Length: 308
Ligand code: NAP
Image (tube, rainbow, N blue to C red; front, side):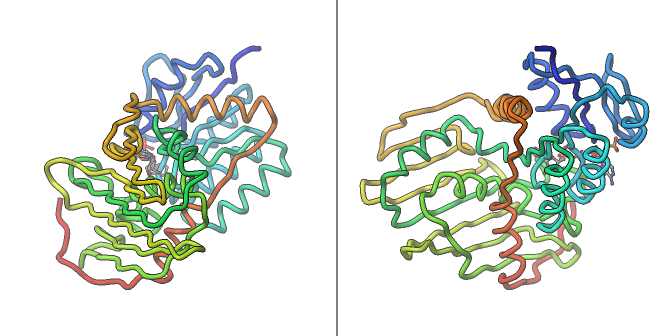
């Protein structure tokens, strides 16, 4: 089968760091164009924006949308209307309603829509899910703490409405726990710490409960300097399980049973190829729904202004 001709739209940090290498290593795709206002990739056709790309390159079959979430919906509408398969970076939109509409549009158009959650493809996540399937979870503790100055320098969009603030990385933890925990869970309480000069939170503490009453606590913080923390600890009737290093390392009790490489984006593109081949879509909004619930239910507390 000939490779699917794909274009990246919004050529920023994640496109450069992860999408390009993952696409170059995947024979199911041919990276044939980039649409971005200010950036391009040597040796690949460049267009200023998605509409020009769609107008001038009808041969492109799929697009991977890597711009900030606030512009995702309009770009995806244009691509679906042009009959392209669409891969959405996380979060899949600025609102849940947008994503639901995209799902309906893709179905009507008969194209694949893939709302990606890259952390679900971290090396140890599938095994954690399998091991928890038969267990009774009694408590969960999520610690997702990183330095915003180190990982998001100059990204103004991340603080603005739709950018999610600390939930931009935090939603990765939510994408993992919604995949591995055997029961649905619901927000019961939340506190969002919002800098006086910003719209999005710099830190948040969320408390959830599952159907059986297990306490699920999550702390997100963007003010952590030094070692960074992306850990999930799960207590079960058969002892503790921990997913650390963003989901790449699995510990059962005191024993490390798996420590994998960074395989998230190769996994995403393998899944996108599979969905296209099967004529299916994969749109799970559960992580974004929990963030929306946090904004609905969480108490906003103003904290010190943030300056880069
Ligand atoms: P970024 O470095 O700011 O890049 C996004 C690019 O999109 C920009 O360089 C810009 O390129 C384009 N863009 C920005 N505003 C736009 C607008 N209003 N209209 C059209 N294009 C616009 O951001 P990023 O870190 O790559 O993140 C992009 C998405 O990937 C986010 O949803 C983020 O959550 C997700 N993500 C990021 C990471 C990470 O580690 N950074 C990891 C996983 C997922 P031009 O100026 O050239 O148009």
